[in-house]
Amino acid sequence: MSGLLKSEDSRLEPRIRVLRNHPVDMSGDFVVYWMTATRRYRYNAALERAVEISLSIDKPLLIVEGVSVRHRWTSERVVTFMVQGLVENISVFRDLPVSYMPWVENHKDPGDGLLRRISKRSAAMVIDDYPTYLPLWVMKRAEETTSVRLEAVDSTGILPMQMSEKEFATAHSFRRYMQKNLLRAFESSPKAMPLEGVETDLTVDPAKLSEILEEVNFEHTPLEWMWRVAQGRSIGRKALAPLDIDHEVQSVPTKIGGPSEARRRLDSFLINRLGRYDVGRNDTDDGAASGLSPWIHFGHISPYEILHAILEREGWTPADLDEDSTGRGSRAGWWGLTASSEAFIDQLITWRELGYNFAFHRDDHHSIKSIPDWAKNTLHDHAEDRAEAYTFEQIEAAETEDEVWNAAQRQLKEEGLIHNYLRMLWGKRIL
Image (cartoon, rainbow, N blue to C red; front, side):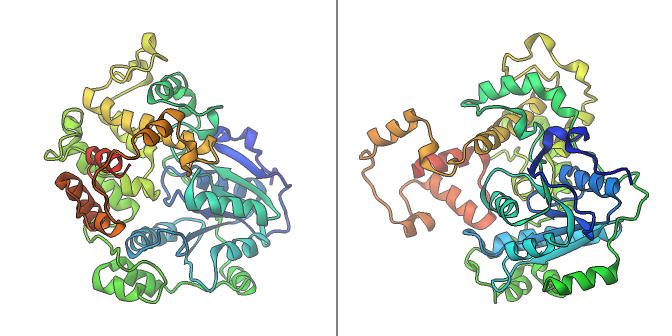
């Protein structure tokens, strides 16, 4: 054992934030990776960092992936999708030299209590760095309640969030920043296979793990129950019935969670739709959009895996970049790719990561107070413009005078997503 590989000495350093800078507790039984946002094996920087720590201090690695049922938007649809990914991860990690513990929270044993208890038996902890909603709350709770070394590792996008020192107000300004820093960001890109080449067995001794879990009052989620939830439809609904969640928002049979389904859909997009994405993505009848957003959102596939697949498909190298226009913020031509690929990558990086940049730098990102003054003024000036007024129930039921908006709302209710172009109309009409 050579001692902890310090974050500043790791290739992943731009993606690592040390939340609790304690020495490693060598009396701890294992390193813990608390998986909250990057719910996959492939292209997972947090898992890669956890493996680095485990190897450097000669401790086994315990991965805990939990599904919360206590947040505001918990529904059958959300829990089913997440459990489907969790069930797949059981199979994936079963064949890898680490210990993996899936868990679905119940109202009798909230997740923050389990996190605190397990941390007391750990040598160090790693958690996903995510700038908003439930993963952010869990990360903050971990920072407040754990007493061991705690590192947050960012796998959210192509550009590490902390690489930027400010928020960007426009897509153009963020695109300029991206063009200047892309190759530097590539240097800290996560490995496709975090455990590739690792010959050390990092699994926790089963007898020891059982003893520890009993000591911390951990209640295993039955595998048979998780399997039933993952089936969806009537089998899944019956399994979920005892949970205090929204049972009106049901799972979508055609939307199956998990990394393998995400990769299948990525392959389909690359083969069948990417080639016309630039001209067809805003056509609601064309269907050229990728449809990958649910799997990206729940961490079942990495933006790096998507980007790598596109670049490999086109035989791209950094030499293809237009150096003369670097930093100018051009939407097209800078990558040296086909127009359709460049259009999609602009959505994948610029527009998606602009949102993460805003959330990372603004603690009030969830509040209307965070919007710019011009937007506040516009809303104020036009507050009385609308003649019709709808109840929440009418809006939810898609019973407005705007049939296009109604169609988008019905798609959201039935399929769990809205066509990317109609999403803008949907949001603007709400405002």
